[in-house]
Amino acid sequence: MNSIAPKVEPAPTLSRTAPHNAEAERQLLGAILVNNETFYRVSDFLEPAHFYLAPHQQIYEMTGKLIRAGKVASPITLKTYFAADTQIADLTATQYLLRLAADATSIINAEDYGRTIYDLAMRRDLIRIGEDMVNIAFDAPIDMPPSAQIDDAERRLFALAETGGASAGFVTFGEAITSTIDMAAAAFQREGALSGISTGLRDLDARMGGLQHSDLIVLAGRPGMGKTSLATNIAYNVASAYRAEELPDGTMKTVDGGIVGFFSLEMSAEQLATRIISEQTEISSSKIRRGDISEADFEMLVAASQHMQTVPLYIDQTGGISISNLVARARRLKRQRGLDLLVIDYIQLLSGSGKRSDNRVQEITEITTGLKALAKELNVPIIALSQLSRQVESREDKRPQLSDLRESGSIEQDADVVMFVFREEYYLGKTMPPEGSEDFFKWQADMDRVAGRAEVIIGKQRHGPTGTVDLQFAGEFTRFSDLAQDDHLPERTAE
Image 1 (cartoon, rainbow, N blue to C red):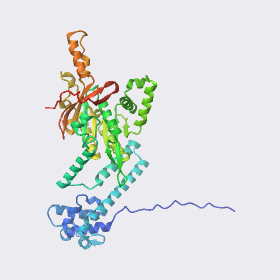
Image 2 (image 1 turned 180 degrees about the vertical axis):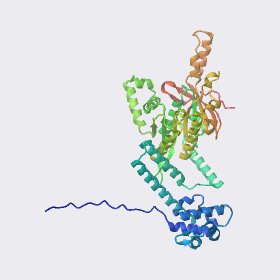
Image 3 (image 1 turned 45 degrees about the vertical axis):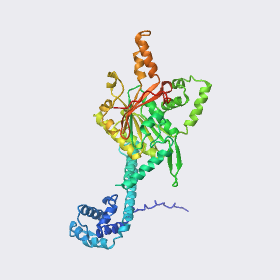
Image 4 (image 1 turned 180 degrees about the horizontal axis):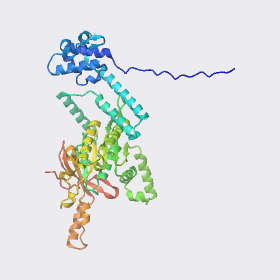
């Protein structure tokens, strides 16, 4: 007997309607037509595009234009904007507008209805992004590799997230005062009594009040001054001091220190880790690289590395990335791990979003503007390192000035804080006169005075004083630290 295998038919595809609530749309529009003041309860966050039905989009848009123009929006005034033969749900435009007014919700419930419409619109946008991701992945253009697809999807998702919260709009002065008192209370309770995140350097914290949220902090200097070393020291100090508490909703709130992201565009993660472990163990990094260490040193390295593995410091060592890629990766880190401080080494190694860089000044302007916007968006301080122009070398006094940044576009304008690292020892060491000469003894005295010292010159600070902070610098271990309390040079304040 011949048996015929049953033919398996594919399961039918179920078509689903995009999430919406036509009844809520009708009742909200009716409430606005009955009482125009209702419009201002939802206009801060609700746009015509958030309505699912096209006639409702048109009605809401026309209603808004009339009300903002100081005119009355009602079924009678609105009907003149529709053609006489317009049909909406088998009704004439006039009949439909009158039906809306009859179905009006209470003005008290208007905002809740507006939120419902808004949330449904966000869900539809999410579905649209998901569908586009699938379609592009199936039939991707030749010039769009998977990494570009991921970046595009992340950009669209975060753009949706940015508009996903209704604008705060105006706040009362009382609310602003409350926020200020909360900030002061947090500073009072935090170790070191700082309003921002502690750098781990006492005198720098005293001058800046810590690293302030949403600030773009530019750390600049000529090669050899120790920019990367100082940024690395601060990053590790912040990460090693990290302490958090769990909130009732299950999320973690940073209490001290912070989670740090470090974009190392010049050095590898291994080189950066070598610097940090050298600084922590006081074993020269050159000895670590050569393996010129004793058994005791090796045990110290192992112990330090075990502690460092628990420190929330995340390093991205990709070189030559664009500002758009950096923004996407920072957002991802914030979402997946958390983020309290971002460090970028350094600005000139970033590229703009365009494929060509005919005008480098405009490209740097795009980069610094993007970094400042990112600091505000993520509400974290960003320390961005920057090179200085060569004109510093031609001056007798080689201390950097804000004018040395002018060739770099809008770095000075976009930055909330501009700091320069300067080590007189570096330059003085290159001018050694013949031994035994009269000049040699004077040079030796000057070298003794500046040996192991560094200056952090705060050339700009929107919310605090400028001036110079003296630090100890151990070049062998690439470590900046506080000077002893009685070992400070006379304080220098910018004119």
